[in-house]
Amino acid sequence: MKRIAKLSLVAFAACAISASAGTLQDVQKAGILKCGVSTGLPGFAEVGANKQWKGLDVDMCRSVAAAVLGDASKVKLVPLTAKERFTALQSGEIDLLSRNTTWTQSRDTTLGVNFAGVNFYDGQGFLVNKNLGVNSAKELDGASVCITAGTTTELNLAEYFKSNNMSYKPITYDTADQVRKGFEAGRCDLITSDSSQLYAIRTQLAHPNNFKVLPEIISKEPLGPLVRQGDDEWFNIVKWSLNALKTAEEFGVTSKNVDKMVASSKVPEVKRLLGVDGNLGKNLHLDNKWSYRIIKQVGNYGESFERNVGMGSPLKISRGLNALWNKGGLQYSPPFR
Image 1 (cartoon, one colour):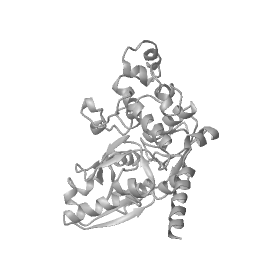
Image 2: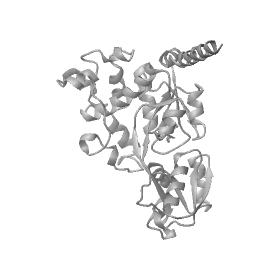
Image 3: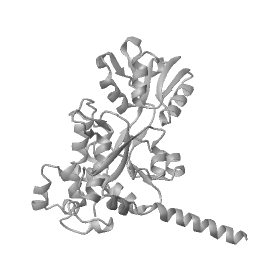
Image 4: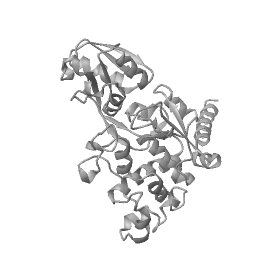
């Protein structure tokens, strides 16, 4: 009986893995990619003046749609709170989660998800009103702190204050927008979150110049897209879609010159990237133009960064750690070979 029960459990696990596979086929059959994003975070996922979603995370969604459906616009963006995001992915409500989510050991090993890479290296910081007269996080003893529930920032905050023998009063909200409104209403002395989010929130305040981000960065926050475990085919597609963005920037392939590169580039890796040589699409069960479409319709990583969060955006975040590996940063793609 024990052997039968054991075999039954093995069979059940195999069926569960099989049932979660086939995301590529499901997306292609539906003709649309369901992608989970933030409920509204400038630079990463927000509705612009033209009523269209934009942002670094939105570009990740559109890159995958361009690769697998041929059209970057074939995306259904699903706004999710921090509490909702993992359940939505686990349940199959979405095919991909691209929502400023930190890659941690516990998330990677206990939630049934796989991180497909890092599209933004971040770190937790503090946003304060200049009138508070604070120049360092070490001066925040006894402060009240607005924070988003269900995020890694809660634990980071607790550990930082404990390690520095300071106390604080946490005031939690479900969304970044609620955090901002609570801060504006004076319910807390400061906001803590990923630094990128703090810069985004500052642009939404009535008088942005009255606020500053303190110099301390208290955590590592590698943010990236996630997929469900058990579907290596889909995992590979999302992972290499992100790598295509980075490789294109490394070799100077942009949305504007990609057609010229297809016709004239002599660089072997560029030719493989653009589907001129080799058969890399077959490895992903896609055609060889999958990465060409990403670059043509979305652009390379640098283009996406600059228009959404970089110097060409209201956030004006420097590349820093998000520069390419050959420019002093951490962004790096394995070879297209």
